[in-house]
Image (cartoon, rainbow, N blue to C red; front, side, top):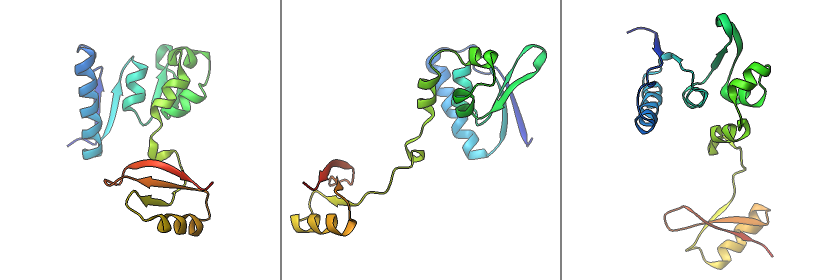
Length: 147
């Protein structure tokens, strides 16, 4: 049971659909097993999907930048790294943003089944001008604004 697993271009010879599924499965397994994986790839999109940290290597295996995918996309160390990242860095960075990490404020909620007086009371108690109405399955349905 080695503490580190080395994978050198493991998905390089498979079609894009299979590659995507294998990447997802590797991510799932890594979260389950908590193994350190050194994943070698020349595909930067694959690196940002799989990696928590990325090392961009230049000639003679010199490290050009070692950082999180977000940091490399936001602030490439030099022109070499910028060229390796390629066009569309801002869009690639958006793909890395998870909803749970956005940091939105908790909003008071009401149900579609709540009586009107309850809705007014919650608006007043919350000290806000908006409430999030949830459907019967507790999914966001619509915003209610005091007007």
